[in-house]
Length: 364
Image (tube, rainbow, N blue to C red; front, side, top):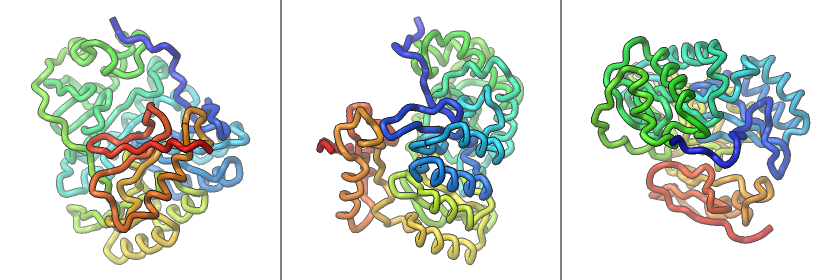
């Protein structure tokens, strides 16, 4: 029998905000992490003028605005900026992709066109609006970075994976196969939010797709926390920057918009600016560092993450953000093992892979 959740899926969106302890939380889906400079400027102004001036980066490469005072006004701004192309499907546009899109040393697949095609096809299928807000699609360019996330349905250069399980050849193009997998999940899900929650779910979906389950090699390790310059195979450079604890102010979002026409938000809570020459990369790195981003791979902010904590989360037992910041203040460089701070047993936002867990227990 499929796993049945005790409560319905309440994953927030831009139109259905989550009632957090510090006010409504609106999550904005950005497929493939792609956000234009104009959209960043809109988000920055909205966070400052309509919310608590906090934009959080999520573990699915999306963005969320905290403490929204006027959700209707926010939705109107998002729609005008092209960040809300579908009222019916806005919560199901969970698509992660390799941030370099095939440009890196190990990248062999251009994922950007696939992100666009998948998003458009997903929004065109009315029945897929019924997907849980936690169902995740992934497109890996061969780097292994998004494969490590064990998405519900992932396309890699080696073929389709379902909840981390590799399949044999699936007829049709990759987008069609991903959508067929999502439709099959809806048929078997019961009350499950993720394919991994359905007993033998990957095999059941594979059978519906007419594909065999293959031996799955060990899952690649998650991408280590990183900041700084990344080489591209075409001789250009990408810059990865880390906003402390995965949070930006409106001013920081606007500073990011000033250095690039488009950025990629990563599932490890950083941002990537691509296709820079060395001079442009140096100027962008200096500008973002001045705005409070970590652009040095040795920065203590690289490798330290935290949940929201009090007062933003009613379940937290302490001021997680404050404890994490005080911890970073005592470091001289990035920790060898990533450190995640949490305020309760749920461990929200904890990265995959080796992590040192710390709990903020003090009450506010």
